[in-house]
Image (cartoon, rainbow, N blue to C red; front, side, top):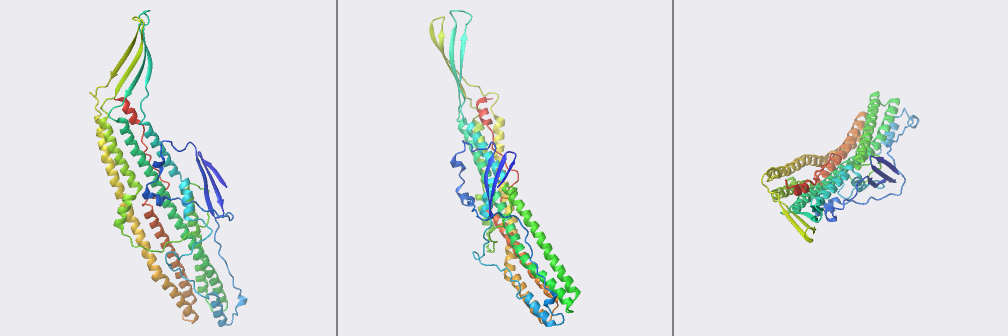
Amino acid sequence: MVRSKHDGYVFQVKTFGKAVVAGSLLVTGCSMNPFITKKEIAQPKSLVANSKIEKPEISSEGDTEFKSISTASHNTSASDIEKTESVKLVDAEEQLYPTPLEPIQAPAAGDQPVLTGGMSLQDLESIALANNPAIQELAATTQKAAGYREQVTTRPNPTVGYQGQQLADRGTDQHLAFIEREFVTANKLELNNRVLNATLSAQLQELESQRFRVRTDIQIRFYQALALQKQLDLIAEFSQVAEKGLDFAIQRREAGEGTRVDVLQSKILKSEVHLTQRQTRAKLAAVWREIAAISGIPELEYTKLEGTLPTKIDVVDWEGLATHIVTSSPEYAAAHDRISRAFAGLERQEVQPIPNMTALLGAGVDYGTNSGMLNLQVGVPLPISNKNQGNISAAQAEICRAQMEALRIKNAIEERLAVVSREYDTATAAIDLYSTNILPSAKESLDIANQAYQAGEVGFVQILLARKTFFDTNLKFVDAQSQLAAAQSKIDGFLLTGALKSVRDDSGDASLRDQTFSQQ
């Protein structure tokens, strides 16, 4: 159990085996606003399928900490090889390299093995969606907007009072109790509701956009970490080969069959593999820290991830996809809600000059005549000097501004898609070429180099370089898979990224109600 408190936020994180599940997030002063209805909270049907949060599965195994992957070392004793018999050296090399390392082929979709016992993408998404501070912040802005919407539709309170006249003239004094009420005209309160309802709708779409941003950023880093895990496995495997190669080079030199160049080249190869291993571990640790920050739980412990990297390559109609993303994006939907708000605001300002009516009704007694009395008073302000011209002009300009903002967002989506299309097409080209050409060629080159070395046609350095080439191509293939997964995640998330950037608080205010009753 990890428990921490930061500025009113209390996080409880339970670690069960290799699955980490976020506990309750208690936000001081934040609770569900009663003015937001269940219907408004429900997500649009077109987005529900993409927004489903899977409940994370909890493993019963023990806690797992982030540990470096150790490299197994194997030292071959010089006594195991007869220094004077070169045939023994050949036999020893055959034992050292019984078969070449198998290349990573691109299996068909659905045939890839899945790591078991780790944390899945759905687990991380569930944690992030529950604890990301930007989502909590936007949830609060929707509550604000709902509160303002409720406030601007409330009717005025009546005024009750007492009036006394001629109180100093005993026997002729008059006493009156009255009630005064302002009656709103031109359907102003309903128009107020339309303006703030569009505001709330826009904020709900902004909240949905933030969920997609969090989900996309988590997916990108999940696949980055998954690729780094896979690369560490490859590095650990090749590290054993490099270690054995160095030992064998030393033994060959001591037996008079090798040269110092062979030993130095073997040392260089081993050092390069070790450096790549350290750098990959550092990258994985950094990516995990990013995941923890996006999830809103900096204390989130590293757990090995389970999943598969994509290999299936689909041909994408980028123009059709651009149209789909624009029409389905909650970011663009929020912009259209703000256009609706601008038109509602103009309609509201146009009726503002129509005056409300104030009525006063009083009842009392006149002791001068010993009879009852009634008093009725009705009044309206005259819209002579102030006809709300400035607010109407500003509302017209707001319509233009909101329309241009929607156009800007549309163009921004298309611009982001152009960048992602380049990343996607570049990654698919690399995966296709690596799986069909480069990796098979690297494997064949390694096999030929092994055979040529055993036949005495090439030197020991050449076999090391062939293995290094094979090793590098496998790592690059995994990199291409990671890039493809990142591009696909951006497409699935409507190109929305930036889980921790500042959010848009456009929840409005209750000034329309003040304007309704000021009449000035």
